[in-house]
Length: 367
Image (cartoon, rainbow, N blue to C red; front, side, top):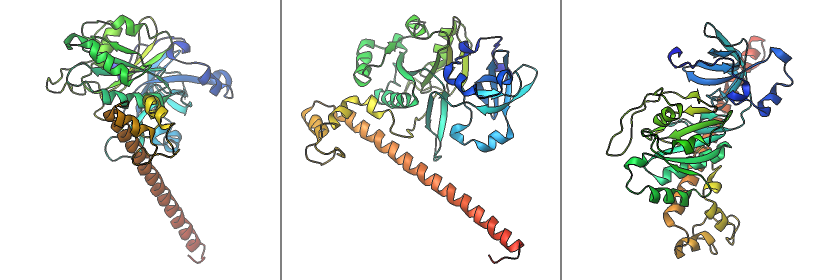
């Protein structure tokens, strides 16, 4: 972890993203003894934390590790209360995790059924997509749904404008699918369009970068920092995909104020609920409000305004099908998650019943 640790010394809490929302959570605590810190990186159960005294290593208190579920375990960007002031020569203990103001999460990869925290307490999330073979407006819609659901503000960055034949057409295409969301076309490699991105970030604001491998997130971080701090790698020309050069989430301080949270590239971004879908697909939501039946599934029901719009060409059929695909995916995940929680509860009650039966036998009672 030491190789990645940033020299954070005597910064005001506000410069690290602390504000009234978190301050209110400390008012009932024990006065000046409370030491708030922000998680800047996570490495296999250990953390790098920043506070007003500087940076240092931290680990979870044993009690806390047992109490927290996966989704509530500290992630990069979280604010915590630590036992001792962080420092380079000691490891402090995380005693409490403050309630999050925003959280960008996704379904864990594979067959797992828990939400994975990607970035906590961020104000703005840039969905980064390359203007090469990796360009995919449907993927951008998926990212925007999760960003809106997180509580943060979304923005789209279309990187690699230097190799795109018609950048304006790509920008217009994204704007049609992301109404009201700012879209920036840049070349991070050549630092083109970086000033407009930098202007979105001010002191105390936390910005996360999300996107697939090879989109150029780490190159963008380097351009904003003005130095080659993040490792970057080549991408395949066939599909624009790159290797996972960024292997962990890392918070960095920008010169002039603001914080950036770089994340590893995602091969998949699984929805954990349908939050955010109505915002991304506001046109479909508006049409659905005109359907004859309130519970219309937009399939074979009579008086369906959505199907009528598709049939007449007012609503793009591919866009509608993508909306339905995301809706089904979110519903399927929620069903799997509910089933997983039910089985967990059954196992817990089963173990408790076994313990009660053993206790009765020990006391000479009947099982």
